[in-house]
Image (tube, rainbow, N blue to C red):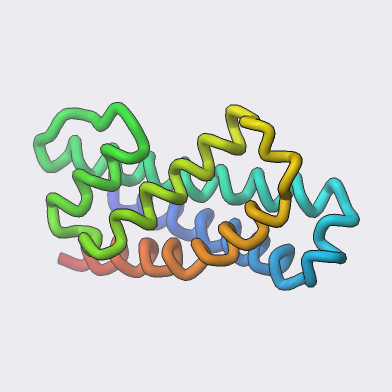
Length: 139
């Protein structure tokens, strides 16, 4: 994947993060009133994880490793390559798990409050991700 394409993906991720922030800034009582708020936030969160995984997979393969099979593995390899901070690996894995819960609909609709709070917690993680990838591209 060319650096230009990665930069475009990072820009797309930034837009998704901004949209997600605009939804999660609402008090939960307002957020949960609208099905569109919930589904938009969930979809943006899903896309953020998928874009990151796509960037990870392409970066890892460009550096000579096999394509990671899972989101978790893609983040793990980025840590191994010293592109992402090892201290953040657990959080990247947790965010991937949350994405899987959303996609596979493991009765998550029962508690949108968990998603709301978890997604809020992961916003800075993906802002950090964007910065880390930009730093990597500068090298």
